[in-house]
Length: 176
Image (tube, rainbow, N blue to C red; front, side, top):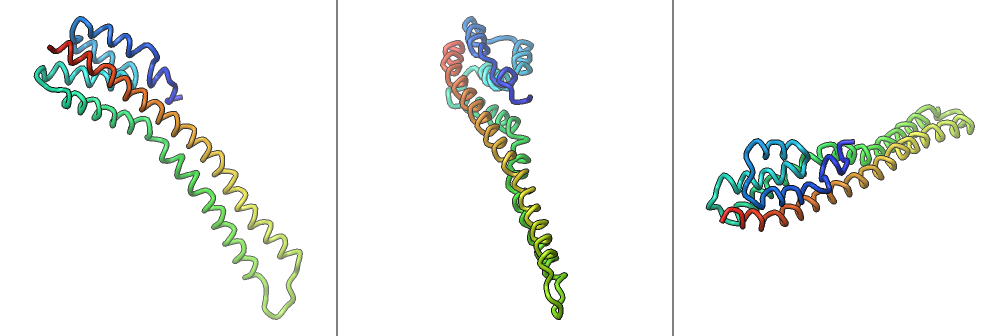
């Protein structure tokens, strides 16, 4: 829900901001509304705020403001992806750990002097393999989901970068 395009990069926002800045830099209350509207709005608002704060700043300073806001936005978008990636990575290992513990249990239950019971051994092996299967049942969907959301976030970050690049010349013209 938090990675819906309308909440991150509304499709008409950049055009609205460019139209708004054609006649000059907007007031601080307008920038606050822009910042609160979406993640892209926050990035664009920081660039506009930097342009308004330092009228003599050059293109490099504006780019730095956009990049800094972009890093904050990237961190905000990626905040839950690490947990999902960790689950995808750790689940097979936990399944393997269960398998190893199960196998140790099987071999530990066999007494050296008596014959082995094939039914007990087969049951123990099946329980150990269930652990592996459960680990994979968790890991595979988590990995697919992580890759899907990672791709979404990367796409959103690219759109924000392109929007900042498109707004930058407009801000440089307005300040002159």
